[in-house]
Image (tube, rainbow, N blue to C red):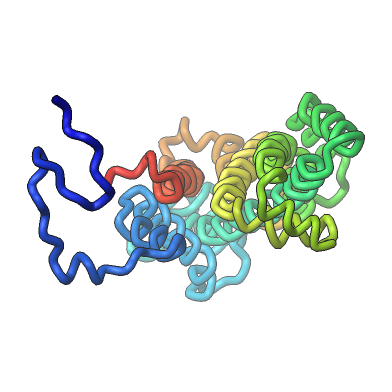
Length: 312
């Protein structure tokens, strides 16, 4: 004969009674924020990716303060000198300090990522939230606009725009990248918003007379904060890759320096053929490290916010 079901907490004949110690009984449950922080500080992917990004960011922000010249393109040393104690990353064929170009290039790389990723994230959130929450004709119009921008070859548009701009800067480059790289994020945010708009807390806010944007930013957006943050990281890294591609083909900023422009100069002046590895290896490693660390950190964040992916 099977054992009849017992009330919750009552031991069955097959299950020995378990005595709960005072420490276990008194242990408070973690709030969602504290729980995320608890797993974040124990996630190696997040910690390693964040550490690499912070080190490179600190190098780009603080590095120029320790340089003798404020012009990274100044001719300051012997031509084509290998790395030594004076010029840590050597010099170009024109006597330019590659370390100075590298630290200024890191600053430009992060700046274009922030501008391009930030603009793309803002546009994606506005379009995705409004389309997903309002639905109907508003959703159809915004979805059609998103699909149009999505099928347009963004790289070709950027090539044409940059080719005909008289003066190109990091800000203008980031603006164009942001205005062409938001559609996929808008579609994802729309889908998430569409699933949240029928929840009880949204219905209560709607019945209380709250306006559309108040409901979106006070009720829906906080429940998607982790997803929105990870989306921004992906847009940030994507903007850096697009900007580096434009720089490498000679359509980067006309003034200043970036890691992509360093690669373009090294290729243009045959650094590989001349054996000047110190000219093209540092910017290549810099771009790879920044973007790679961002994506590793994003994977770590996904494991932190998604209980199904946590290892412990």
